[in-house]
Length: 398
Ligand code: CTP
Image (cartoon, rainbow, N blue to C red; front, top):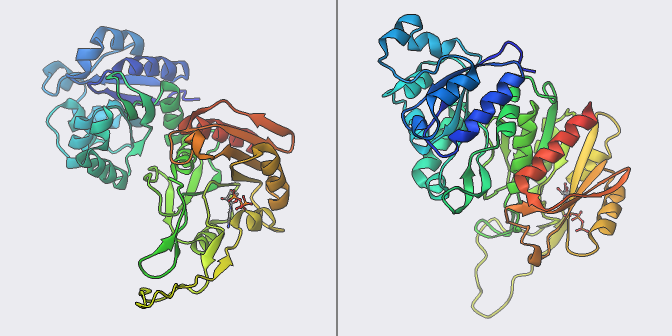
């Protein structure tokens, strides 16, 4: 799949550097040429000998190496690649990139390159969540840097949470997508995500507990398979992934408009937890207590059902329409009925009763309901659910 492509692989100094060795093998098995750059820190975790042996060539290490510089200058090195990949991308490397520093070979190559850059961050969860790293990631996304992961899970340091480097297979998928080689390249997929906020007055609203984690993961997984993704999101806790077209909305009605505007699409995935009702008599000014104990009366009106509207389109309907069903009882029966009622092709059903910890949590246990029946998937991370669903979508679109 990557025959003749040249990847400049920068290996940063993190424990996940060992996974970079596996990535080199996977890339070479796909026919890519790998030009490795091992940072000083990276060299503390994996040896130049292993990197060079697996890459089948020279390992670049030093900015001021006269022999290297005579053979190929760092400027040439940064440009003679189809894609620059940083794995693992440490907090320090991301900070250098965001600030535009060029104080060693890796950061200089990253500043000098005219090619796309894909980073696979790997760090402790506190470092990933630190405001400084958040700022740097936001800056890099705005600069058009592509991200693979990080995933959530147990880390080498014993802590748990986001920061674990994406698995080599996932990085390989992201590399394929960045080079326009994925099974969904040339396809357009709409993904809705997050909750909606329905105003009561300018300061109050009706909302729900959706974090937007599953929708964001699905958008990222589809992007990694090469799709162009329109990501239409309500006010979610989880930041939207990089490399997708983000449309931020507040209310169900805004979300519906944004979905309509994003059409046509090959597929649409409705992962948003859209509020079923809005406040019909929402006030333009803040509702005040009247001092006599009179309670405000909220009149509710039903929101448009976006999924049903798109699934029911007579003309220009996306070929595959996927809905979600958040249920607390009789998950399969209710979800199958919902599939029929809404006219969508598939329903991804999950049990969101509080005991499952799914709503707002890192994991999901889903049943995929298609025209062929119900398929129970084992409980797994929301990222893994997303990748599996994206792969199924790629298969269905053929
Ligand atoms: N959905 C939508 N627009 C709405 C409500 C829901 O697009 N106004 C979509 C959701 O994104 C999801 C699916 O419909 O893909 C199911 O949503 P859910 O809230 O579980 O179903 P409801 O239609 O609300 O049914 P019920 O309240 O009976 O569970």
